[in-house]
Length: 285
Image (cartoon, rainbow, N blue to C red; front, side, top):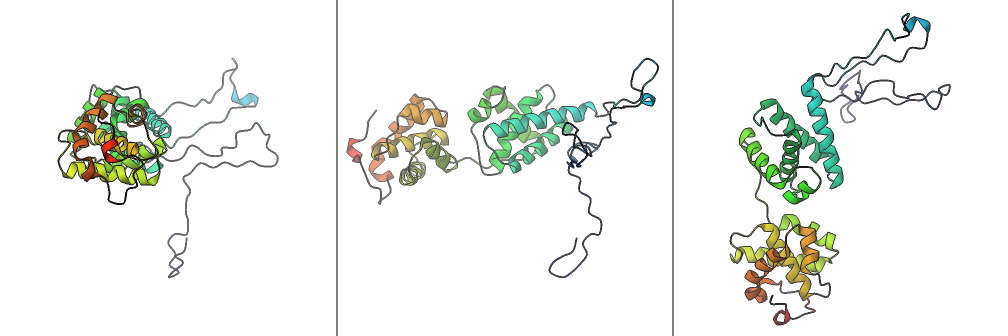
């Protein structure tokens, strides 16, 4: 490996720790093309490096009773096996909500730290993994709601919330506060709303927070109410139920937040917004 800028030889022997797949011309199609073990995993105690003995074919491979003389033994420790199961569950959850690989890697690292500290004894590994996934999404700037994490896991929302608080305390870490803007783009995209409505909903939610119209309300419910108001003022109208299904909030929650911002509706819309329905004709609920 040579630096293209200065010609420095960085390394003369580079070892690829990835899995090798190779098929020779004289190999049968049913033969396993894997020439080495699985990829190296730095999160495990031994890097997950193992040796597998192939199945014997000659007479020397079997004893007088027909049993194989050489057998593979499971050398993986119980802790590594538990972490591998958790990593697999984390990957499955991330795949279901289309999260990128960097989120999975951060979640795996968080889980390893918590598991090795043994600070959450008595909590299931699935609950810890779900909470770690929630934290990783927040730390990477792509937050997901508790309900979204709960929908792809087998753990209740309450249990994920408990583990979330315990992990933050155990690791002495923190996450940024979520805002309405963190969810607006994804919610509007899933609802099929145009860019103009998304920008208007973002402006409405931000102004509502600045004017302190929604004290004590969660950013998700404020975002849902802002989307409802913006969509009702445009030609692309969406019902409370449609928005609630995407945002994961109840219709009554949207109505409660909407009633708080409705009296100041003229002050919340951006100046260049093109109204299909005038402000005074918006639903009063």
